[in-house]
Amino acid sequence: QCPWGAPSTTSISCSLADVMSEQLAKELQLEEENAAFPEVVAAAEGPFITGENIDTSSDLMLAQMLQMEFDREYDAQLRREEKKINGDSKVSISFENYRKVHPYDSDSSEDEVDWQDTRHDPYRADKPTTTPRRGFIGKGKDITTKHDEVVCGRKNTARMENFAPEFQVGDGIGMDLKLSNQVFNALKQHAYSEERRSARLHEKKEHSTAEKAVDPKTRLLLYKMVNSGMLETITGCISTGKESVVFHAYGGNATEDKVIPAECAIKVFKTTLNEFKNRDKYIKDDYRFKDRFSKLNPRKIIRMWAEKEMHNLTRMQNAGIPCPQVVILKKHVLVMSFIGQDQVPAPKLKDVTLSSEDMKKAYYQILNMMQQLYRECNLVHADLSEYNMLWHDGKVWLIDVSQSVEPTHPHGLEFLFRDCRNVSQFFQKGGVAEALNERELFNAVSGLNITADNEVDFQAEIEALEKMNEDHVQNHGKKLSTFSSDGDPPIYDE
Ligand code: ADP
Ligand code: MN
Image 1 (tube, rainbow, N blue to C red):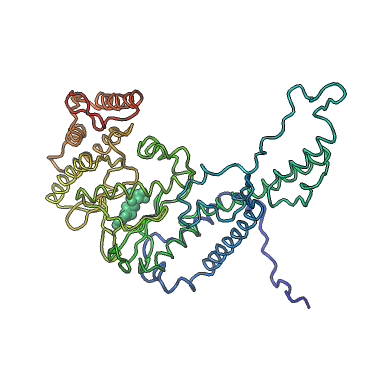
Image 2: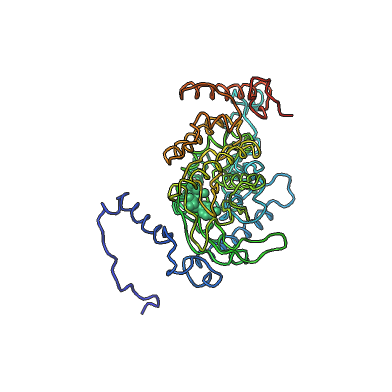
């Protein structure tokens, strides 16, 4: 009998329509995601990640860890081969594209180097000996045209070097082989289709992981945080948004330089590629990131969101604004202190019912925070509303500042105006009689003195100010450090 045995069950057949149904695929995927990341933390189901359940809880995870280990070994071998081939020759070829774990998603610190910039294209031929335009070299009888069989054949053989390293060409390159154009073209065709096939495989892998809320690499990152003892337990997910997933965790051991809060929030920025497009106007025009934006791959841009949130939170912390405290940033995963208690996050302002006294208190606190944010942190929140303010310990806490920009951002004042509108409307509806209207609030926060008494003119003046700043950038190569508040000449940044 065959040692492998025969499958005892026949596979269930289904219709072609089912197989082709995008709807079904979507539903299945959602089901899977929901199973993996339940909306609410169900205490009975036990924690999401603890030190104990790493090795045993999930076969899938184990398989993924092994796969990653395997990929790393494969790459190490590839690197050895690369080294062997290159030796100490002046011209070297790179196998980078054939690695399983690309430098930008590996965990080592080397990925801080922007590999895209330094990498040279391994498949561009090194200055091919060109046949001049007229199509022949030499004189008289010794004339050689570009169609000369011998020259062409040798050239073709040499050109095999441009094929991918995994494409076996044998010892041909070293010999005086003369490949006919026909043979060379057939080989080239084959080599390229192989290359494309491999690229497609990579693409597919990328796509399927990007779809999920937290991909295996992110899960590994989270495991590592628990493994290292920095976190005690990741209890579960407290929010899944379009752009991020937030987990609750109990803090672990303090290190030499850091005390870990008793409860932490872990914000995982989604590595889906379609979302960042909606937001690129925030970051693309932010001069702090200007030089870096154009060269980056999407994955790096996602990381910049996390980085931005960290920097902005730190500025706010320094100004004494109530907000989460940054614990650590690892790639696209930001760990911060948890606002709330016993796994229960503080309610958003939109979900809490405050006494009219607390409501008034909250309003003045926010007015104050917006001013501090603008003046001391040099920031505009840019997504300020009752959705991103938590009520905790009798005060308002600001969260979600990855999209915050400096006031001189090309759209900074527009963002501020939008923030003011949200805040104004919320408190006016909430019955705070003292609440300024959006235009008054804008002036109070920015110190600008825009006098227009209607929305349209106000907006126009804001845009005129922004334009003035942009023109200044065009002419002087740098922006104003602040907007002038009362017709004085603007203060220039040194
Ligand atoms: P998003 O971009 O998805 O809106 P947020 O930063 O607003 O990301 O986080 C989503 C939700 O997660 C918040 O509305 C809040 O309920 C919760 N949350 C985020 N950070 C914290 C934190 N530090 N403490 C408690 N809850 C948090
Ligand atoms: Mn939010």
